Structures are given as structure tokens and as C-alpha cells.
Length: 99
Image (cartoon, rainbow, N blue to C red; front, side, top):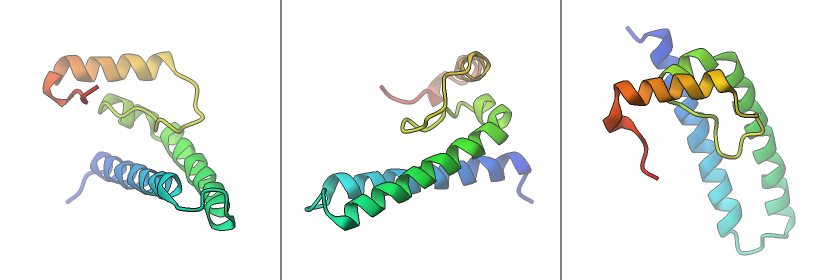
């Protein structure tokens, strides 16, 4: 049986992967100013808004598991989220991401 927390973490991981894949596509596209790249960029904005809403809804679970908002996110830094993330990494120092 999959817990609700695990399901949220997995869904957030999938959403981040979609955004990373799409942003890499835009950066590596041969015609970055073409129609296809512009439409992809618009779709990327939609996905970023979606992941922002998801993070706000489930911020307690995500931040307590060391998950920060995506680096393309439009969310402002939240003191409580940062505290939860630091507490998580103090308890689990090996899980801290590489810089």
C-alpha cells in the first residue's frame, strides 16, 4: 500500500522531471525563436504554475521531506519551508543535494 506522503513525493518528482525535460528541449532546440519553441515556452509557463500550486497545497509534506520549490518557480521564499528543509537535512545529512 502506497502512503499519501509517498504519492505526493512521487508526483512532485514527476512534475519536476517534466519541467526539466521541457526546459532542456527549449535550450537545445535549433530554432529557439521559432513558433515551436515559443509555444513550448508558453506550455512551460503553464507547467510551472501547476507545480507552484501543487507545492503550495502540499508544502508541509514536501518541505518536511527536503523538497524545495522548483528553481523555475515563481514562489517567494517562505521562512517555514526553509526551516523544515534545514531540519530535514540536519537529520539526514547524506541526502543533502550536491551543490
